[in-house]
Image 1 (tube, rainbow, N blue to C red):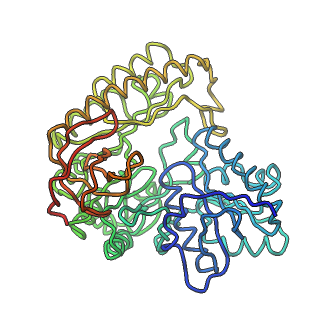
Image 2 (cartoon, rainbow, N blue to C red):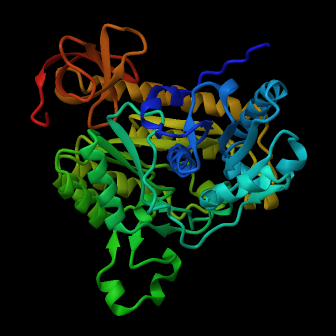
Length: 481
């Protein structure tokens, strides 16, 4: 019989995804944002209690799940191609079940079962606890779909299985959903309204990760600065909370402080921030604790006030500059990264130049840059004409990328001569003789292995750089070991 083998990234951590006595095999892939990868860990945990252990081999799987992204058309097309691959395997192994999870599942709903004949179940981001019931529906020959959005589900009671893990770094989800309604974005429609997770469950997860040897966590949410726990419920309903609930509420700055104090040697990162919601107390909390990393991902999307308004971004160019100035004043060595969209509807050459001038002001350490991709169901798709020609989008995007590479090199050069703490995460992709890790600013650092090992905090003297990577030599263990 012909064999089709597909190595999945999860294969790096199979020892963490196994439960004694389980006999069924799960192959799970994730695309898109960090939240999707975190959600896949929740799914693996749920299914571990249903008899499934993960496998890196597609051909061996009893159940194949793909966790999808709808943020851009390219992401959806990638998933379609993966389904073609699954179909080839399913012809050899007809008993294999195939499921689509995540934002693309919620957006397309039952259309997926109609369009992709090999798909057996479709499950939205808030319905993963229903997976056992949906699998039973498939076994009985019925369509299985649940894409209902929840007002309170946070999966705070589930201990995730750590997939694709190096045993050193981990994601901790703190919020779900988004209320911002940017005109280009599908997230509010695929993940629902903002709601926050009980801070005690977050601290319990952080403590558990430390006990298991993890050294760094990233607090995750579509908009972490909107974190607000007042006993449960949607953020938009906070005004209806009791006086006691309001007085004892936990915001993001307080949560950061709690995490930093709970495990003072655990490195803490967070993503993603929204310029309109980041407050001074968050920046001041970062400055107060050494174990909170000096790095902020702060998507701006455009440097033009006119385009920002068309995007329904609740900040202006001037307000963004003011926030950047506060960050640099309070945390002078803080690294900042961006998201940028080129060619949004009606964008003129003057708007594009505003974006380039904003980048010149900030000089981001790195960024994530894309040409505008019209997403079905968004306000931009319904109300705006995608009128910027493709060749113009590509040219503007290329200019943004080139400027970012220039600024990236400018920023990495500032590290040369410094001695910086690096957490070793893995072997360098380019050299088996070198370790790869990140400093507090989230910049990759490579250096000779010597006698160090994965999970060590090492002081590294930076001697050279590229626009994205620092190169150095270890000078000894840091105080965190």
